[in-house]
Length: 404
Image 1 (tube, rainbow, N blue to C red):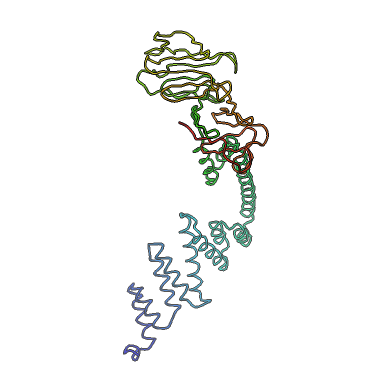
Image 2: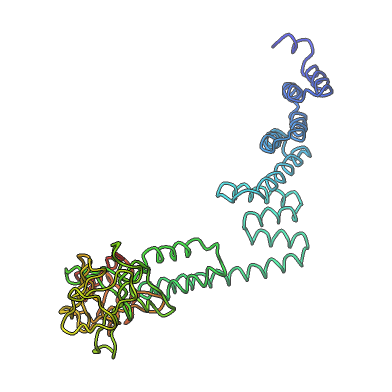
């Protein structure tokens, strides 16, 4: 036992603690009250320290210490519990609700409920997203209007959640069947009403990222690398295609040459699928040449047509031997297949077509096209990277390599 203990005993510590408290040395006062064996006084001083603390985290720690030190059932302990719980609620209002914070809020709400402050407890349960606890606390508080509002809100939330789940399931069903255009439209319509639906937004973003938008697309058909130029007409030049609401009316083949104008040569078919194909200069600066002569007016392709853009870049037009009714455009070292509409593929009865909104679509009859184990719809919107088979889980017949 120290000299101080032998002379003054625990009562001496209490006297010195009071003097330290009077001069504002609360930390020393708490230490001395503890030495005096009076935990309720130690806890009371810890509450005072908390009240004087400006930083919320430090203040909350003092309240927590007071709560743990004060004897069970003592009024100081009840006050420490109340202040600690209320400060927990106040600090949580501006922060994101993590799992740890939610548990702290629930504990604080339960304490306030036990302390006879049901309205404050209801606030805690609300912040913790515990509707059952909030309803119980509001019932204890006799707040009938707030309780009815909560129950109505909860019913609305449940209806909203069911609608969200139904929308997500519909989007997944559409995707599985290859109806990506409809899936994206369905997802976007939901996001207009609920822009914070992160999972559905990620699903829609993934669809958009793989969607092909250009009129010239590369596909691999039964091992053969093919370039398709879609459109009711094809323009050779240096501009981007014009897209309409029903798809690309004009396909564009880019020709990187200074001799070529922005819109240089137009290729079009007249008289339907089996009509005649013509080429015509679009008033280009350097002209289009046929057998060394500058051409004017419509030039019939016939069995084949060889031209020069700006008298420099050769262009050759011939009927396609791979795709029925299509023509082949050879320019700048590349071969493009232009079907002027849907392209009938030499695989079952498949067709490639540019559908509404410029979506590339696979048209088939019945369930004879599969993406992995999923059977595609009779008109399926395709994405870059798709690998289509004729049988479920079978070898790839058609791969959509994407834009060039």
